[in-house]
Length: 202
Image 1 (cartoon, rainbow, N blue to C red):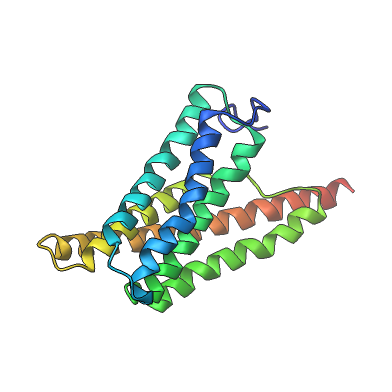
Image 2: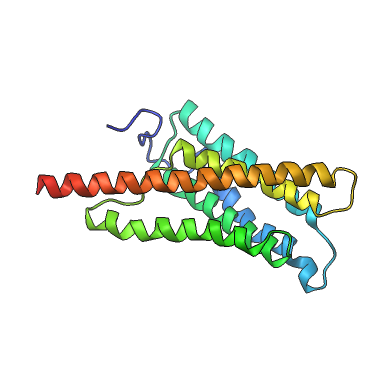
């Protein structure tokens, strides 16, 4: 049985939580442009890129909290929220790897998790399910990574705060990556249980 916090409560589209998720999605190309601008001869805009990432993190926290508090959990919101999370993670990985701020092997580990999850979706579809709701562990992983990336950008600079920011960012990256894969394994277990239940009921 679905718990109250995750059950769809409204079919409204224009709610504050949904608008926050839409704003986060709109910020993805803006962030990519800001982070990659120096690679194409433009001035360094890392400060603005950090602000976009900070907005993403704050809005990610607020849209879920407000949706639960105001009874505005919607099916659209359940689609927009994880979509925005994944696009921000993917765009940040692309931008930071292209800028050679994030090592390619870290990007490969995180992208492999996305491929792993994508490989489970056909199994869910086979049994009449769409993507499962985002778990608390998955959200915690995303929060860790979204805290890590702005700090990693700060750490790439030459200010007095660069070194401590770099140390803290890597702590968040390792913890976030661990949680990211842990949540994927739990997701796979859920998919397996669904498949076994459907086969047993057949």
